[in-house]
Length: 282
Image (cartoon, rainbow, N blue to C red):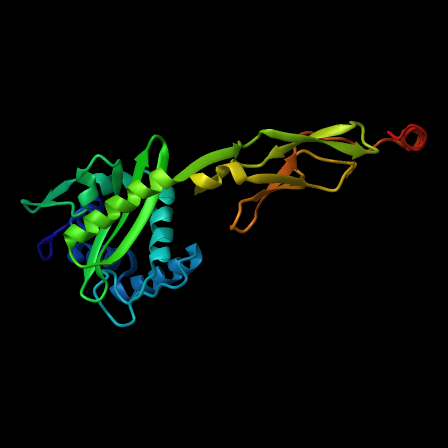
């Protein structure tokens, strides 16, 4: 980034120095400003990595400079990239900036996919002698986002080519679909001894999956709960689950909640209900 010694730099410029220009001086300056020293900041990095699920990563510096004990997996890179997009939407736009000028020195963003028509809006390139050339990229096409991570490429050209092929393959061979939307009623469940005979079973959140297009026709959905539900039932009670079955993949389970309430009948009403059930079957 070419920061002058003893100069004042805004946090915004430092972030662009890291994100757009890949400046090691910007990374160290941010680390020292946040934690007082780079070593303390590295401890914070390792703690945060464990917290968000990047559990096979271990950092020894703030820059990514090669070190025998500085390690990451491609999966961990994807985890960190995903959390970056989710947790910092107001700052994520910096990743698609194609250039940044500081100290009268203009430097281009090294992400080659920003200069294509693939819908890329981030995130970062990397290179070490041991790891080769790598790239974590996020693309958005027709409201569908894909995140890809490549590493071990021999040069910049191979990195760009591998990333482009992987993105094209992802959009072509896989489909993303929302099976049920948050708040959608999936089924009506019977209630035993309740002031209401039935309550709706509702999705707590969107149930979305991404699978190979060839498997879409083979998806099976099973709704599991103990019927009838026992009154009282309150709105928001987790009373059932949806199991999504995809051939060759582990089953995925999602909770269903009660979308309405059903109080418990009074004593005499319960007697009448039990009698009706014994005599008429319902």
